[in-house]
Length: 110
Image 1: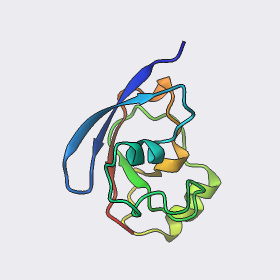
Image 2: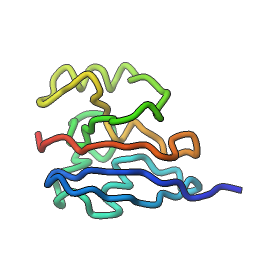
Image 3: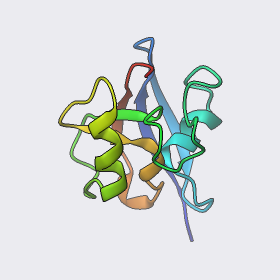
Protein backbone atom coordinates (compact mmCIF):
# COMPACT_ATOMS: atom_id res chain seq x y z
CA UNK A 1 0.00 0.00 0.00
CA UNK A 2 1.43 3.34 -1.03
CA UNK A 3 1.44 6.39 1.18
CA UNK A 4 1.86 10.12 1.00
CA UNK A 5 5.31 11.51 1.68
CA UNK A 6 6.49 14.94 2.77
CA UNK A 7 8.49 17.17 0.44
CA UNK A 8 9.91 20.52 1.61
CA UNK A 9 9.98 23.17 -1.11
CA UNK A 10 11.30 26.73 -1.11
CA UNK A 11 9.57 28.62 -3.92
CA UNK A 12 11.06 31.37 -6.09
CA UNK A 13 9.94 34.02 -3.60
CA UNK A 14 11.86 32.29 -0.79
CA UNK A 15 8.72 30.97 0.92
CA UNK A 16 8.96 27.53 2.57
CA UNK A 17 6.23 24.96 1.87
CA UNK A 18 5.85 21.53 3.43
CA UNK A 19 3.66 19.55 1.05
CA UNK A 20 2.22 16.06 0.99
CA UNK A 21 2.95 14.06 -2.14
CA UNK A 22 1.07 10.92 -3.18
CA UNK A 23 3.32 8.02 -4.17
CA UNK A 24 0.59 6.14 -6.05
CA UNK A 25 -0.03 8.59 -8.92
CA UNK A 26 3.25 8.24 -10.88
CA UNK A 27 4.02 11.95 -10.41
CA UNK A 28 7.36 13.70 -10.67
CA UNK A 29 8.57 16.70 -8.68
CA UNK A 30 7.75 19.19 -11.46
CA UNK A 31 4.15 17.97 -11.54
CA UNK A 32 3.95 18.23 -7.75
CA UNK A 33 5.13 21.85 -7.86
CA UNK A 34 2.49 22.59 -10.50
CA UNK A 35 -0.18 20.74 -8.53
CA UNK A 36 0.45 22.96 -5.48
CA UNK A 37 0.84 26.09 -7.69
CA UNK A 38 4.26 26.90 -6.18
CA UNK A 39 5.51 28.57 -9.37
CA UNK A 40 3.76 31.00 -11.67
CA UNK A 41 1.67 29.43 -14.41
CA UNK A 42 3.70 28.94 -17.57
CA UNK A 43 7.09 29.19 -15.83
CA UNK A 44 7.64 25.56 -14.86
CA UNK A 45 7.33 22.39 -16.91
CA UNK A 46 7.23 24.31 -20.17
CA UNK A 47 8.33 21.23 -22.18
CA UNK A 48 5.83 18.99 -20.39
CA UNK A 49 8.42 17.01 -18.46
CA UNK A 50 10.62 15.87 -21.35
CA UNK A 51 13.94 17.22 -19.90
CA UNK A 52 14.12 19.71 -22.78
CA UNK A 53 13.74 23.16 -21.16
CA UNK A 54 15.16 23.29 -17.59
CA UNK A 55 12.20 25.39 -16.43
CA UNK A 56 11.75 22.91 -13.56
CA UNK A 57 15.36 23.14 -12.37
CA UNK A 58 15.68 22.93 -8.62
CA UNK A 59 18.44 22.71 -6.04
CA UNK A 60 18.51 19.62 -3.82
CA UNK A 61 19.15 20.78 -0.25
CA UNK A 62 19.62 17.48 1.60
CA UNK A 63 20.94 13.98 0.97
CA UNK A 64 17.59 12.19 0.68
CA UNK A 65 17.74 11.85 -3.11
CA UNK A 66 20.02 8.93 -4.03
CA UNK A 67 19.60 8.94 -7.82
CA UNK A 68 22.10 10.63 -10.13
CA UNK A 69 21.34 12.84 -13.12
CA UNK A 70 20.55 10.88 -16.27
CA UNK A 71 22.13 11.74 -19.66
CA UNK A 72 19.20 13.89 -20.83
CA UNK A 73 19.22 15.83 -17.58
CA UNK A 74 23.00 16.38 -17.78
CA UNK A 75 22.70 17.65 -21.35
CA UNK A 76 19.90 20.10 -20.51
CA UNK A 77 21.67 21.45 -17.43
CA UNK A 78 24.78 22.15 -19.55
CA UNK A 79 22.65 24.68 -21.46
CA UNK A 80 20.65 26.09 -18.53
CA UNK A 81 21.16 29.21 -16.42
CA UNK A 82 21.64 29.32 -12.63
CA UNK A 83 23.08 25.77 -12.54
CA UNK A 84 24.77 24.63 -9.32
CA UNK A 85 26.40 21.36 -8.27
CA UNK A 86 23.11 20.33 -6.60
CA UNK A 87 20.91 21.22 -9.60
CA UNK A 88 18.36 18.67 -10.83
CA UNK A 89 15.41 18.79 -13.17
CA UNK A 90 12.20 18.28 -11.22
CA UNK A 91 10.65 16.37 -14.11
CA UNK A 92 13.32 13.68 -13.70
CA UNK A 93 12.66 13.08 -9.98
CA UNK A 94 9.87 10.55 -9.42
CA UNK A 95 7.71 10.85 -6.32
CA UNK A 96 8.45 7.61 -4.46
CA UNK A 97 8.58 6.61 -0.82
CA UNK A 98 12.40 6.69 -1.04
CA UNK A 99 12.44 10.51 -1.27
CA UNK A 100 10.31 11.16 1.83
CA UNK A 101 11.73 14.28 3.48
CA UNK A 102 13.38 15.66 0.34
CA UNK A 103 14.15 19.38 0.57
CA UNK A 104 14.51 21.47 -2.59
CA UNK A 105 14.58 25.08 -3.71
CA UNK A 106 13.08 26.01 -7.07
CA UNK A 107 15.76 27.68 -9.21
CA UNK A 108 15.17 31.17 -10.62
CA UNK A 109 13.15 31.34 -13.83
CA UNK A 110 15.17 30.58 -17.00
